[in-house]
Length: 339
Image (tube, rainbow, N blue to C red; front, side, top):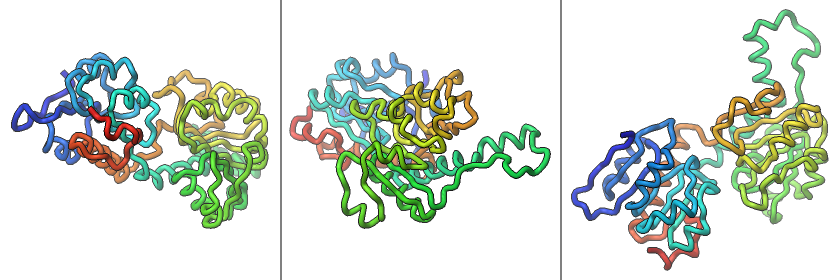
């Protein structure tokens, strides 16, 4: 059995299920107050059938993006009071169904802002200067001599950066761009005048952003409205020398359209930390292209940040099960209607 149980002093403690092995200090914090069962694997997601079995008796669920918490699963959870998601995004959870059932849903915003902004800028730099491609070129023994135009890339300094989605991470990326003297455009569902003044950035339409930007960073949340937000039409507006970076969620960029745009040199390169289906198949067409840098969804993957995310998720869970309103409650209207 790939899980173990941590019993409380008595059988009256609320029951919690944790869907992946978490750091011992975070586990201990939860264990102090609750009966805990944890899937004891770091790299392997809990099987659906095991999750279905466990959720039938628990009061709290501590989960990751790898788990699909859908209506069918929620129907099996008569005692569930809170779902604590160790992530900023929560498109893996049917929030509407959870709200109907009086189940709180929480996330971990703010914690990973700077770390994800670092990773976004790292992708921007590695794609523009062909870092991964150059590393491979050297290691494969192809470097025979210096050549004037060998592995030439795109300049970052003085270039135009377009940010789609000016949330916390978008603003953090804009701050980094200032160090490279970049002209920053942004498009957001609402204009942010204070951020414009503070960061020296310019609000513009999506069409103008795509046409004028040398780099386009996708940093908007995944919603039904943002699914395939970047599709054939949007990619066709971009410069042939432009680079697309997506560190938000898969599915916002249409991957088939992106593959064709890159293959046919309609845009210059792409840096991707996310895919519509994760983990991505090794047979995915985008992985065949040399002008794409791909990462396994590591936007928040610094030790400090991941530990903080785990801790915030634990705090959310504990507060919810103590009949308090968690700090990072996604479905606020469920308050007062909890089970």
